[in-house]
Length: 370
Image 1 (tube, rainbow, N blue to C red):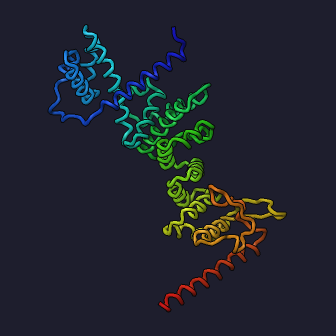
Image 2: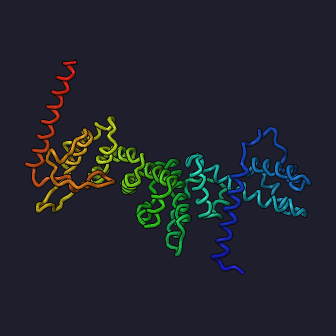
Image 3: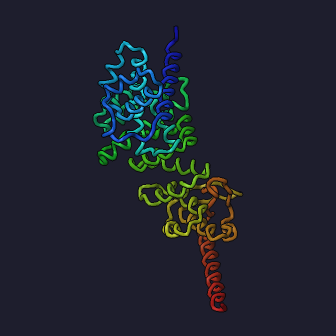
């Protein structure tokens, strides 16, 4: 009657309905000492009182996976009401078991709950099986990565499915690294650069937060820059934290550091001064470009100097940065923060040094007059 795609859609809709029902019915659990035995509660599911049936359902939800045997018996009960409720409750319990598992990492916000919903729907059979046979979780990442790759190869594939599969890969990858920090996990960087993945990471804040945990756990460099540029584009405050992490990692190439320095320039946090000063003498080459009829070359120290000038409330162009191009996300185009030769570069440093010296004198004289 229904084709495979239609059946799958209906199953997803049913599972999502179970999840929403479970969330809506969840209440603070009663103390374990006050709970009635699961078998007694299953019998109450056929009570003439609707209120009694609902109370029994809630108590069985609170018992959780431990009610499996009683619910399995109830599914075979001749009373249709009891059998139906037992089936629904067992689905609800397995959904809640997954949520209780991921909540410590994802957090308890509505966005985190919505992300878990997508994780569950991305592989319903997997989460159901995991609820019944938890075992060890630190070896499940390769399977989740393969599932993500497979999902991305399907046509068509929904954005929600990609978000869920990505979150599953990140979650079990972080668990694996926390369990065995020295083990090497297969990279997902190549997958993250695909269009749907980039959209998912840009639009879903809870998924982006989980991505940050993955990057920190695995020491993944490439995605860190991607996350920084996305955070700058979306004007997200976590851009500063990502920039600080980039600058604090000695393995990060100079081409990544230039974006981190410009990020700290934009935020103008006084505590970041030492991070920028550290790179004022770094001659690491960055970009070469043809601008206004001349070839200009930029170094990391040029970006650090421009960042310093901007943080002081001044315009770098006044001090010798003649090729500046504004950028709404990164403040300036990094390749425009260069000079045609070392003489221009040295003069820009002298201009800034002379300006700061004069300003210091004026500040001192002002203070003495007070």
